[in-house]
Image (tube, rainbow, N blue to C red; front, side, top):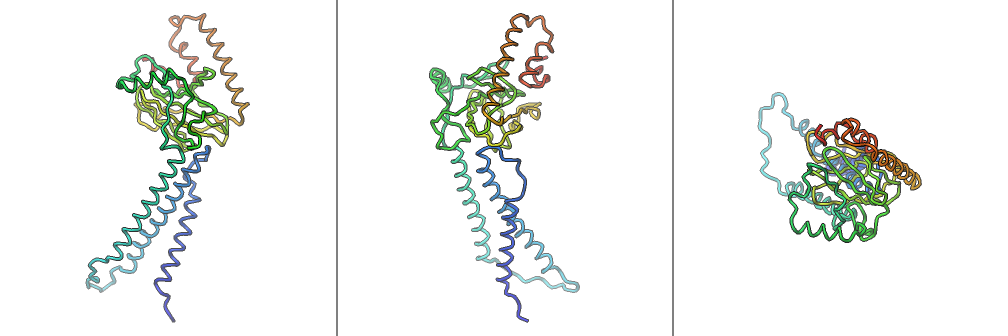
Length: 331
């Protein structure tokens, strides 16, 4: 019986490994649900890396197992193995293949970064940064940064651009602008057009949103896993994030930069409303509630309130844990 050529077996094995690796790369279920226009770009790159990693794992581990069986020591065989000193074609092969893979992945990742606006500079006025007692804002700002801040404050132009948007949106104003302030250990969201502040981020589905991100104390990092977007919040240096939510729902906001003892509890939520009308209704409800609280606060002296009574409106409306607020005021 004629033996099957090794080259044919290698070709068939390669085809099987390739098909299986591609299937794993498209069906791994390792990522959360996609909820933004930017998510498919990141997921496409991740799926390719999973496919390549699966193929390499099978080839390397499969070769090890094959050699364990084929070249195992037989009983009674005390001879040495065949002495092989180098194999130039094989060495070139296993050096060239990983090099090509790394170069291709590098080019692909740069393309994804470019499509998400990574190479386009953004700017906005940092005047929205909230200053709190005891915060260490702008302690190391240079004269250049100060002059830029004054210039930006003097001309309150709409933010030009933010990471996460497509290059086609450069110099085009966003549909919704939200100022995001990170502090130990909470996120505060301010809507400059209405003056509303909240402890949750609310946006309508399908809306081009621009986040102006800052920090009052140390470096934080704003991350929404379902959006596949992350941006640092740096004291004195405003950053930007731009996205379009595509799936209504409530998604977690996580700080991914170690910022102190309660870093793990620095979480919030982004609520994606089903429609612009539903979002406007939420804005109106909060605007009426804040006006009522302001009127009530005028008739009450803060000095006459206990710590719990003083913090109650913030716990309820900003949805920040009372323990977090007490730590901020030193109680």
